Every structure is written in C-alpha cells, then in structure tokens.
Image 1: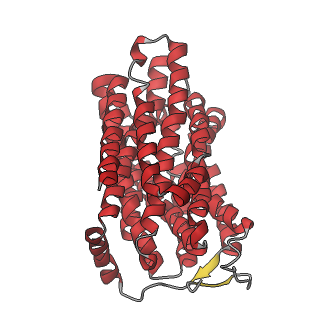
Image 2: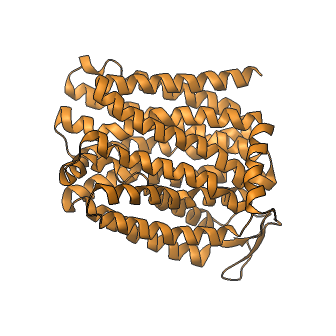
Length: 404
C-alpha cells in the first residue's frame, strides 16, 4: 500500500492482512462524532427558536447554512486529501470544529449562531477525509465492507445525534448540547492524533490545478455524475423530513425536543445495514444496490402520504416505520455509490468523494430550505410529497443507468 507511511506510533499497517479492527473502529468513531455536529441543531429548532425569539423560517436557516457549509467544504477542502497528508488535514479540521461548536454554545443571538453553523459545516468535512482514508487503507477485496463499516459509524452519528441532542436539550438546554459536542470532538481528536496513520500524497499539483481537475473528473465519468445527482435527490427528501420533523411534532402533537430526537433511534436501525449493503455491493455490483435503496426510500416516504387522515397514535407509529425504511434505503444507496465512485480512479479518491458528497449536501441544504417552505405553505403533507418526488427522481436515474 504505497500511499501509507508509518503511523504516529511507528507501526505500519500491513496491506495484505487487511485493516486491524481497532483502526477500523477509530475511523468509524471519528466519522461519527464529526458528522454528528451537523445534526445536533435539528431537534433543537423548536426550543431554540423560542429562546432566541426567532420564527420557523429564521431557525430553518441553521440546518440550511450548516449543510451549505458542508457542501462548500467538500468542494473546496476535501480534494486536499489527494495533495497533502490526510492525517494532518483531519487534525486541523478537528481544531476548527471544536472552536465552531464552542462559538455556537456561547452565541448571544441568532446571527452569531448562523455564522457558527456555517463554520461547523465547513469543519465537519473531516468525516469525508476519514472515509476515503478507509478506502485507501483497505485491500481491494474488502473495500466495500470496510467503507460500509466506517459509514455505519458515520450514519449512526447522523441519526443518534438527534437522539442525544433532544435528550440533552430537554434536561439542560440547547447550549449544553453544543458544549457536549465540543467535548466529544476534542476526545476523538486526541484518539485520531494518537492512532491515525500518515498518508503520502497521490499528486503534487498545486491547488488551482487540483480544483481544475474536479471539472475534468466530472466530465470524464458519467457514473460519477449519475451518482451525485441521484444521491443529491435522495438527500433533499431526507433533509426536508428531518429538518421539519421537530417543528411538526411541536405544533401538531405538542411534543418536545426529546421526542423529536427519539425518532433517530428508528432511523439508526436502518443505518446498521450499511455494512450489509457494502458486502452486497462487493458481490453483486453497486448498481443493483443503488436501485434497491432508491426504491425503498421512495416507498417509505409514500407510506406517510395518508398521515393527515389517520389517528395520531397510528400516524406516529407510521413515522417510526417510515424512518427505518428511508434511512435504510438512503444509506444503502450511499454506500453503494461510494463503492462505485472509489473504483473509478484510485489516484483521485478524495476528489471523487468530494464531488459525490458535494452533490449530496447541496441536496441536503436545498431540502432543508424547501422543507421549511413546504411546511409553512402546504403543511406536513407538502414535505412528504416533496420527499416522494425527489426519491422517485433518484430511482429513475438509477434505473436508466442500469439499462445503459
């Protein structure tokens, strides 16, 4: 494994034997705690808006700016993983994320919190330095499984962050959640500093040429374009749901942040299937897995369409069932898309990953904004209808790719 040098402890990671389990778990944990920072705010929007005297549209800018920051960081910063030592980039981003979380905890008003949310999105892209690092370290025959395991950590961070956020805010307030997040990032940063290997760059071109190569990669690989479009559409519906769930539950069911966060437990059950999706992609090809995942996502959102005409207990149960289904569908599709994209060019995995996830998080940001607008103009049914349409469009892209 030519791109790997000695770890900070002085011990090499052998390529033939596969990755040591503690290193895989470290990568999964690093991805989990960093990406979780993007989602802590979502269950807090109801109580946060009341505390800062901001309406639903204004507080909806918090997840929107966070996702936009993440998309911008993926596009502008993640490609640096091909040019510099990924370990150094990850540690610098850990420090930046820690400062942004502390600024959020101390924010005196909505304006400061919005600026800090943008910074959180930029710095949390360290998760997308960790995932391609796992792909580089893993032997080719185990790449899908290894990426799937690391993605399980990342996805559990996404989903369980909502649970933790809701519970902490219910007991100690929303500022305590940002402080707890800062502590978790600091601890995982120490672990990464001690245990993460160093990586040799795969290119020596300057930053301008590196960014220009993104355009060339996008034009060269139709499979990359299809993956980014499909994943971005799935992410738009996913983000619309999660960004508006807390407000809907507060307004229609009079439930607090803890209840909104608890729905993340249902989604976490779907995230646990990510390694299975990686193994299936290794065996049967990632294209088939993307079709199955997009179909499951659309069907799960469609289950929610009759919601306004159902009794409240049935409606809440259906929300939990749908959350399992669409999280499983989206995360399986994401793992399969990553497996597909990482196989296009071994020398450009950070840049390929940046383009895939830029598409995804542009979809996330757009979904958060459109979801808030749909909730205000058309109610919860408008949010669900939007999610069904976007996931159906993603399925159409994957089916068309299969016919090619």
